[in-house]
Image: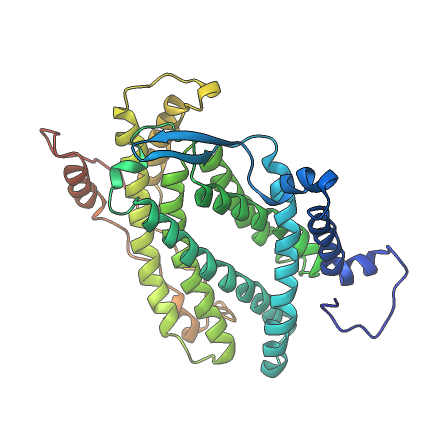
Length: 363
């Protein structure tokens, strides 16, 4: 199964051989695991790679349901899905992005950014659909209090744990792909920065048992990122297309406002009212640590300047056309205190006084 057409052969296991055949090598490893399912001797080991581990039966009103918690064996499962992600990455690159980029006749700089945005559009779209389905079926949108009630959320439904494992697998596969795709050296630090940020936040929500809050925040974040990379792809197809960038600029400010407000309410107020405030890593309770981090994060965010839109691809300093589109900053979310007060009053109706948020902004 070849993912790329090759006219030149390379020495076996050389650097160029691995770069041009990394998807085929990953496919062979995945195939070996799948073949292991066919034999009784190796089936148990093969299941460690394919299925989430640490399942427990949790009694409910209707009987018993199977839930999962995390452990060291999750690393084996994540490793398997890293190879799955590498294969899917190569399929998207070979059969979709390469064919489109040939028709557009892009420069090397635009070609690199086109591939980056193309891959992220596919990932963000699938993640938004999957995450929205999980959030709706688990009832996190209809019952916002479930984001912090009964913390710690040690036991996860199958679809929640599997979603987090796949998310970790995707972002862990991203750094090696920078090498396999021969990304320009100037682009590597920027891409590594947001890859590491995603890994830290997703792993933190998973390990600190904040999976419910993490799902909602990822849904908001991925929706904005999908819009941005879609706008960038449309720009490469037609440089006069600026409407999606304007839509993204508006959505960026709104989603950041909701992300900040929801995180502060859930961590700073919801978890602060949970009865069990003891720091107990053995039972998965990180409530005291999380409240301290949430307080520090909210304080830092209240003093942060307004987020500035990144320039449109191809924009150069001094270009009036580029500055007209994205050469300005997003409006500062000055309505944070009023929005936070409304959400607090709705989520905590028993509170005698409304939430008072004082911010020292330096916009």
